[in-house]
Length: 323
Image 1 (cartoon, helix red, strand yellow):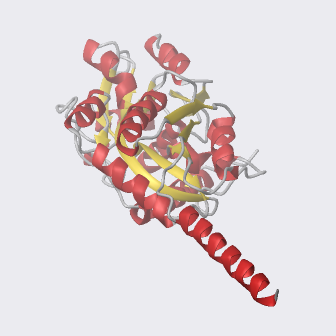
Image 2 (cartoon, helix red, strand yellow):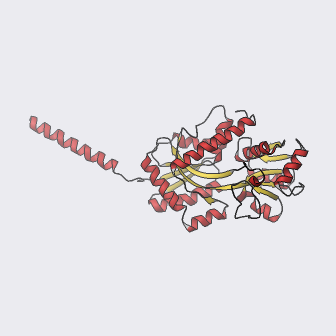
Image 3 (cartoon, helix red, strand yellow):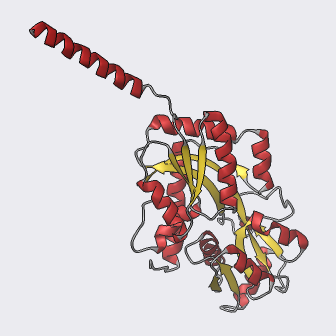
């Protein structure tokens, strides 16, 4: 009887070992992946996520489902990502607001560095400094001189103090020595509408959103905020040609919950980086004013840390108090 029990016990251990081996050997991914976009459907972030998601689905032979969870300055959607299972099957689309939003909140919904695992960068696009045609300035230098001569008289549109548009303009004003009035809007569209009407005088906004207005002459572009001139509008100089240390980009990337296995991150990062090299994807991104910028997870982590430090300083220097 003892031998029989021992044999049964051994057989049970062998079966258990095989089961664990089969589980451990399951290739990632073996079920659908979801991408949480912290914006409403139809916008640039949503379109980019669906473009990359479709390509990722084709490569990984698994469905990739995009879910939109806007609101709360991105914190509703990104909070869902932070609380998701750390298994690589839930990704979040992270933009500059990802590191900016917590700066304006007393109750931090998450820590963008401590609570997430960097997965992959998609790319970046510059902002553009635009003015209403009634503003008598044709260059960044002329605009700075004009603004300095009229302290507190010029108004600029933003989406709030702790947003890409708000902090980018605040940093520009700080570096240029400008005293201007910030007018916050609930979205980019109403801000642009008021700018077109001349109710505010200037704005820093993502290039794709402003390109048509600049080319039509409805707004005057003074400079782009990237490190180099944009191929979409090559005659427009960079702001840093006048303010050497000024450089701002809007970027789009993917994160997962903290603790996501390195193996899953490596699969996702490698495939997304390869997607960004596909000619049709490159063309689609360029059409939207976006420059592909593949990164390793460690490079992306350093990018987040750098952005968090930069915008944290801008917010402190502007005495922006968390609400």
